Image 1: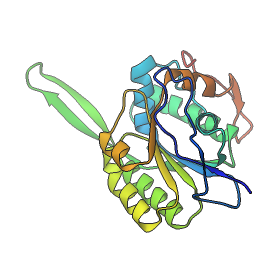
Image 2 (image 1 turned 60 degrees about the horizontal axis):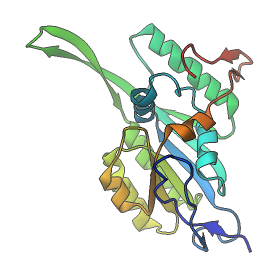
Image 3 (image 1 turned 180 degrees about the vertical axis):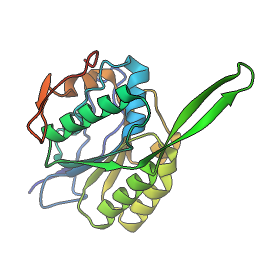
Image 4 (image 1 turned 90 degrees about the horizontal axis):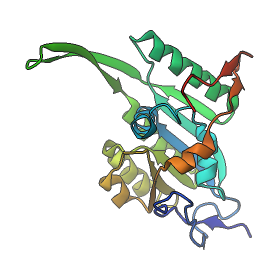
Length: 235
């Protein structure tokens, strides 16, 4: 009889490993633990950038999920983001990364685009003006996907790579509608939510040691057969 592993618990401070717990009969008793991952791209990117600048942005999220849950049967990752606007360099880097990611895992990745809304900001003290970027629809899209996966029973473990407390109502609703699947959070570097942690059976902090083992190759062939090279300064 196949066994399903218990939910994640707190990772060790050095990020050396995450205990998987004892076997559990909860979830999908007829096969391995089916894992799907929902990624808050904006918070994941900014958390990594604050932690280590550009060193680990060339991240393979499929590989990361497999490293975090090695005993699960990984099925799919939904990467929620919004098109970059304005700065041509930012737009180009986002495009290269997403094309590389899609080329590496075409059947196990879906990129879900929200929208970008920029608004003018002004500091009266220093008389400086700038445009502040605000990503829209990401949290709503994640919430819909999470609830749909849980209600349709296509997942045994749903992992949220986010620390957005706005997702708490969706987590509560999903667990109320179908309490069998485990819903766990992998908080991006320098991001954390007590509210999400307290309503989930397991959570972990993303440590650099685990990210370093989950990078895309130096070169990746995109879906249109273009060879894409790791971006400058992206380790």
